[in-house]
Length: 411
Image (cartoon, rainbow, N blue to C red; front, top):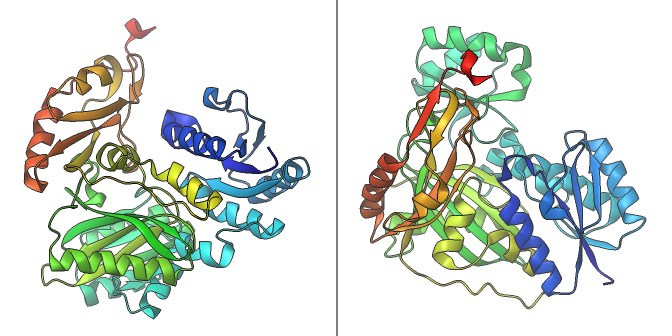
């Protein structure tokens, strides 16, 4: 093979294994070899037989140096980062070596929320009001202007990690010490009330060749209180939902994406206004990829690879029923002594797929991010309300038994 792709892959927890396999398979179908770049000290069984290199993926200079050594041996034509935190680093590597795809100028719009909101405003897409938390007084003044609650979040974060909903002046006094030393890494936004949506898209030469609108069943900021679920809205979208799709296409083209995969989030206020939330230049997280695969017959990561390597490729997506997916969560903490398996979940009515990331012996702690969960399942239904009703039945069938992690009987 005289062409090669580089996949930057983090195997921990198995969250990206299916995406990795799909990218490797798509490249092989097109006669293209794959090289894997893995975190230092983390082997990956799914990368067996491939040339594998290792680096501290959280050290951009180390990654750039390792990629330079890879390109000295392998004719890399494309770079595929599967994890949000690797998108900007991959962009620097592309620019270093003249590789097509997002370069830092474009990637910054997908990683830095200050940049992305400014750019969305320039494109005419409404955004939440925001401020910089230079002082606690600045945050309090902003809250007085827009009303409580407000949201304090890292400008380059993901999965709601280190994100705080602040409901009052007293709550701000509690949260401020948690972010004060690193305040320049944060931004403050008004809390937008309304339904939350996401659009998962594939682009080729600046044109959207696949898109799916889905609606969250919960607030992504309330991941400690209810499981994270989402349901597709493929059939009979409302005029307001169609405006969400149009706004997503505007954002992706305006942010400079030519060919790639994206996950974009919006709010739909009660008055019908579409408000941009965030955009990511990677496949949707959690179980969004398997949900789309179950409902549309395509793997977003694999299709991204095909679009990059084959200029004539078009995704052959089906329509199918509405598909929903929900995280598996538990309010039990400690060492797991029993847990429902993925096979047991797949045997339930309407369940199309499932994965359980935890096993007997693992220790459950209080979640700190919206993807800090036990696994996921995918099910089908007639419409949004029908899928939500099925969620409850499946959720009630999922059982976890724990004991205190410090129990001497645990060994």
